[in-house]
Length: 392
Image (cartoon, rainbow, N blue to C red; front, side, top):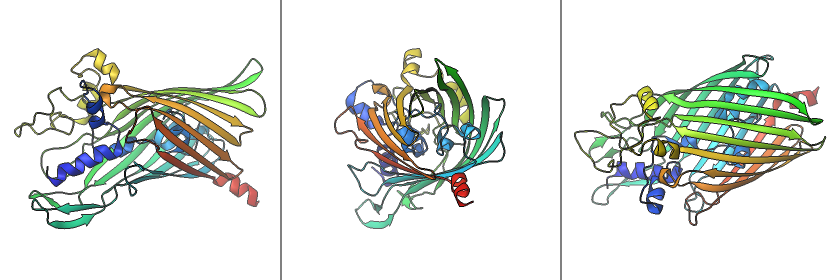
């Protein structure tokens, strides 16, 4: 196996999103969808990470840039920043991690701007020749930076657009089997909408919120100067949440989310390689464009409508707050065994003070010896508006 495909294999196993190898090891009917730069789909923050990765319809928070940037116009504070960190595959390796920095600023009552930086480190890799000679050591990494703008379109409805630059450096420019490699680059956009409605029922204050976000609509990415280009993880997220305040001290929120990769499904025989027909990691001919791929993703599954339904993942979550200072969270995430077989429970907790908020989440798969077992996430949020008010 040459070094380039070792890198691709490492990336697929490391991120654990499509989980093709895991699915094939557990079921013979696996037909998973793989993409380049799957780190873009990793849940970066602890709040949604503790609620079954169901965040697109949740009430707004500082990490909304990943889930639905249209939320920011409904934030109570005018400005805030957050930093999240997760050691990835901590049971297998100790030098792979994901960091996420996000922030927003409300321009007025109807507009906001936001930005985020996502950095994924793959640790250190030693490159060797076909004869085992060490050719060098590299530290593969990937990052994405984006800027967003959101605006209220009515009293309860908002929309937002984010522009994203993606860079993936897996080889450090090494020559792999005589082929010169390079860092992959791509540009993408998110288009999101959000509904937020407060109402009173049964003498209780309630909130119903819902959101939709089409993430990473953008160009394909290549690691060589050849014709082969890979899809990035364009993803459709759709979800809702219901929050009810039992009294002045206790509240519950329930969230649901469904998401689907808008990337063509590989044919069943995608493991057969034809050098005259360059293929992507998932097996789709590389001459298919991103928009055409998005459209085909709704009807191209070899197993028909039944398999298309299998490609939809689900997340459920519940959140309890006491006095808006201490939170407990539980969740469950489901992915069909033929499409990745990620099934896990999540738990989390949060502490909110006047200026700072600290959140933590934990992932527990239903399968033994799963690559994502014991995944931890930490998020520190800073309310700049509240800090400024304290200093006055």
